[in-house]
Amino acid sequence: MDAATKLCGVVGHPVAHSLSPAIHNAALRHDKRNAVYLAFDVLPDEFATFVDGMRAAGAVGLNVTIPHKRAAAEVCDVLDEQAHQVGAVNTIVFTDGKASGHNTDVAGVTAAVKEIGPIEPDATALVIGAGGAGRAAAWALAAMVKEVWVANRTAARAEKLRSSIGRTAKVIPWREVPTAAASVDVIVHATSVGLEGDEAILGPYELQKAKRCGVLLDLVYGPDETPLVREARRVGIASADGLMMLVHQAAAAYELFWGSPAPAAVMRRAAAGMARPG
Image (tube, one colour):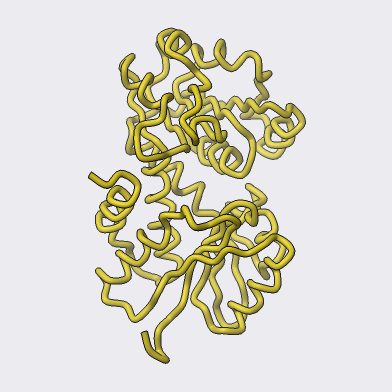
């Protein structure tokens, strides 16, 4: 590092668990950029001040994670279309003293779903969860399939998401998730269930009945397969966990930061090596 070293990073609370520094620093080394990517643990009450400080310091940009994604949308000078639709920002780019907000989670979900397997335009998708990740997933799928079904423990949040998407979306009551899973082509799980090794929200019995489902993405990831991904693969559903989506959204953010293609293969290896050292 020297006086010319460019700064970027990820901000959240907590953030020590984040794989983003390993992913981005591997890409920076590969591209031989004089830059560093750091993790910043910032309390919610201090978030706006922190962003202003990074802007003043000449930082290139920030990735934003829980719990700051909605607050990030409020501190940016301008939002791109996807960030505006989702109502959350996970990438801030500083240019000429201005902060532009982006949501690369949408691109991450889109790329991950396409990598898992092909889906038809007339397909139906079920998104389980309507928080920040669920909103990004629903908007990504709305551009890919005929209809998106949204389920959330808090029905009002699911209805708000449905309303923002419009007539191509509908709400599924939480208790009807197992039944709905048997009637869709794509499933995206976007809740925290499974993060600590919890039982899958859809068990073996429900997944065995999901005969139409050809693609399942679990946005949770860990050192091992999540219970949901393990059971889905066991019954023959093409599946992946959130590590795939994480790398795709990181690559999209990298391209926003530096204005050039991301070394995606390098970033994928770095993520896999940190999440599942072997």
